[in-house]
Image 1 (cartoon, rainbow, N blue to C red):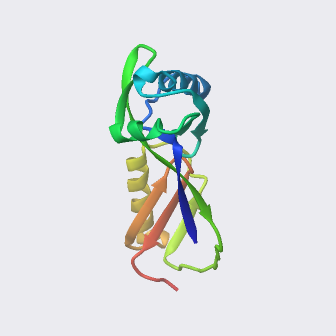
Image 2 (image 1 turned 60 degrees about the vertical axis):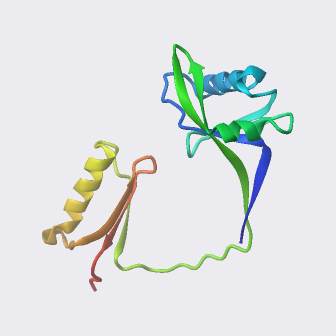
Image 3 (image 1 turned 90 degrees about the horizontal axis):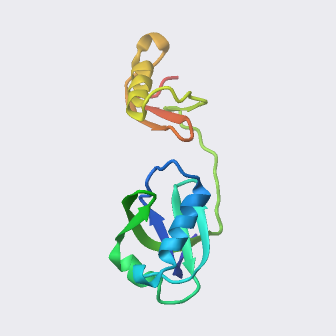
Length: 163
């Protein structure tokens, strides 16, 4: 069972630019910007950088600040010498209960770990698909392939089962 609860005083900030500044400096700049009433903000109670998604959660001390910002959807934020359009979304907390895991075996799937980060995502996906399609390597037609560079994990799903 999954339970989602909206956080009425928080916003989720995404589409952040890739800049040559530390995460702490980026958090400082976002907090400073959103703490100003002229920008639609208010005093920021807490800020959190979500490592797995490169998003930021800002929580305000007052009620009623987050909703108008969320309704705007996007806002221009000056960071350094540039202005960047960032996305503002509602922030929700999740709770998972009664989770039951059942191990299963999928004979058409191969999990690849430790793939070096030497090609672009698209080039790596193509290279993996070509590799696993070659019959000389024991492969076959690849039905689907997922490659996640950050986790350095790839999955190949074959069209046919091979015993």
